[in-house]
Length: 389
Image (cartoon, rainbow, N blue to C red; front, side):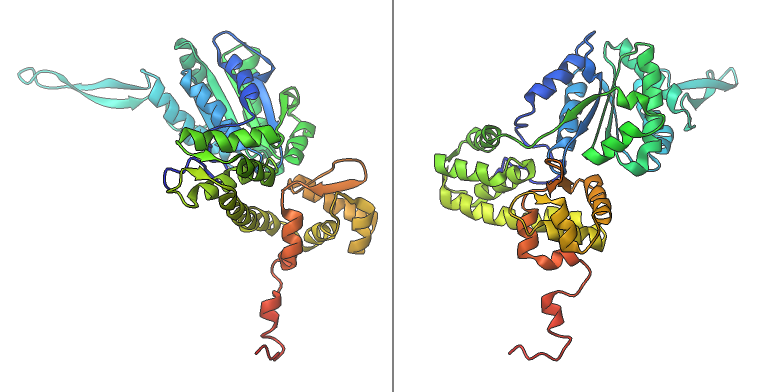
């Protein structure tokens, strides 16, 4: 990779977190001693690949740099059990000087002197999330710091886990203990959390909606890492790379990485290198981002996306329903599922657009990807005795 400064991949922190400094300042205020703000409890949302996990990583790094203890988890069924039986006991035994003590169990003969002892763990692995979290906060406060609870991948099927953790955190916040909370998920999943019973605490959290990068931020995210490594990028090449990224952080890193790899012996990255990088990165979006997003969808959900792809602009929902041969109500249910999956967005009433850049172009170039599991055009040539010489 020739010391490549770019990090294409989901959840991988890039060398420059472009466009997020103002947000990080809010959490720095929370983490500062005695400083509280609305960001003490926050929900981060945004479409897939926009940098939610990367932002959580950055907040966690800021917390650790200030001596805070970080309790991190990806929300799924069984997370609370994992916290109670593994992660919290491990953190407590690491931080609490009284976690492991010795008890005198017997005396040796006088001529030998001394006694025998056994190790007694203060935190056996028993399910008690609230008490262990409270003790962890107590220990952190003793060091002049606090505890950050950071949860990724909020989803409808993990709301019970979120509810249990939120109740424990809320109790400590009511006691004005030094604890902060941040969770992230796609918009529809966060909306479900806001509407769910027993999650009043989450509804009061500060909502942070991550957008794609601006053109200026995309330029900086590409140019600054290049220059920091002692290379340059031509102005025209930088403009091409930034615009081709559409401000999508995954594409910024992917284009930057591939432009860096082209002719690494040269100091300057030119337009030819970027053109090649853009072509590769856009194609890679298909296998790395778009096809995985399609795999979890039903066949009719994919039909909805294929119908959307016929338009160069956001599609009218009535047109999509007509192309599918479905009623408006039935098509609306497919749209709701796609919103929940973070695949589409609603830019305005009566319209729908792709949330993931390049999905329209990918579905046009690879229409069989909208019919995953069905024979491709190439495979069908083997089924009818067709002569393809």
